[in-house]
Image 1: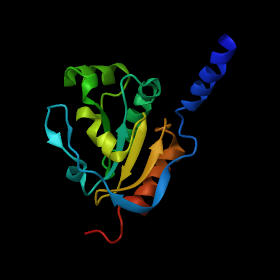
Image 2 (image 1 turned 60 degrees about the vertical axis):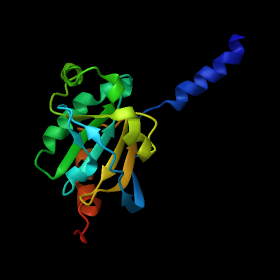
Image 3 (image 1 turned 135 degrees about the vertical axis):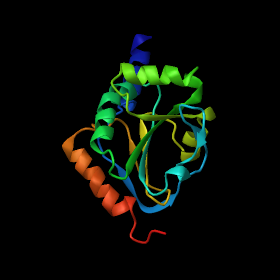
Image 4 (image 1 turned 120 degrees about the vertical axis):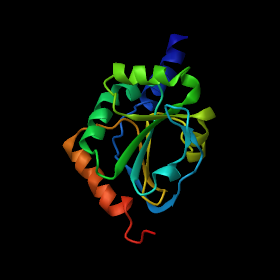
Length: 180
């Protein structure tokens, strides 16, 4: 019996490698991002359209995702390094994981991420509209509100080469020359 189960368990373990080894997937053509609302720490409804004019990195995560928790302090460091650059990071988690916004803020503080803008996704609607069913998963959105790429898995956010790469993405895709 154990010999029958062991290969399945090993296969599942290797399927869930959460590192973003292949890097970002940049699309040949950008596409409109869904405008499904998410909710900020005050319960106010907002959508990605509210962030037009900035390049947005929308990080979908879960409090039950160990790799997501492990990258929070790196992500916080990244946010502080790119402050005032026209790049905005939003972390979005399923609403049903939290009883209050304070609970979410407390968890972020505990794991070294007090500076992150956090939002909740009611019924996982925005994640579903993006076709995202795993965490962590980052959607790259340009200043026009168009999705131009994705990163699936954990990122070493405060790595100098990655930060430089994000600035290059901003120049090449985040701020199209033909903006409106």
